[in-house]
Length: 310
Image: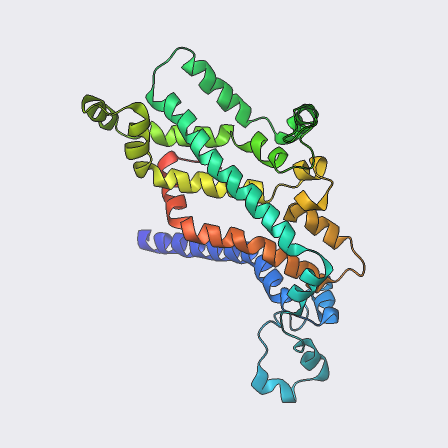
């Protein structure tokens, strides 16, 4: 009886996991497949009938050897596969410029954020100084404050700061999209949680050998903290890459516009073509997928080590 219950629980767990995997993967697969369809009528039909299970909903991989005997509507559904939608995106909008803006803003913010947040967390986790507990409490409190609550005051502040090259105001620049988001309370807390789990004997041994605090951080803490660095990099990359509200508020010139705002503008153009829109979304999503697949092993290790709970 016990074995039967255990097998039933295992089977139920796998069924639920498969259903969840399908639920989360289906929109992504649908986007990728629809992006290579150049038959706009078929794409519109797929989008319109997505929630109504049509007789042949998964018309994604054409059975070429069977199309000759297929009905006319099915043969029409499988015609027009290619990269034309992606070419149309570059033709209708300077996608390369927007991609460069997003890459520059995201990589700079993530890179500087890893340095600043890790060093701040190191001082909180490994050093003893007056006011340390108060600073840590403030950082934890800042985690629960949504960005929307401080977006307007932050925008008013940046409009009064000296502009590089002369003038007042950071609007319509790269720095307004980078500098306010380098330091991040949640990233500091993740680093802190990981650093306090490392043996302090490593620090004491290095201090006895004459190593300074910065050398200990760079040669001991960083090499042993790769999982949390990967986790923070992925989370910060996702947030920065997908940021929409802030650049919409502070960026008006297309020269500094990231992909998220550009996609909204592209979606508002007429004629509104779903194939081109899904191709734009595909090229925006692929960097995130590549980053996660490259660092997923360290990401999972860090989640397990730091005890992150949803």
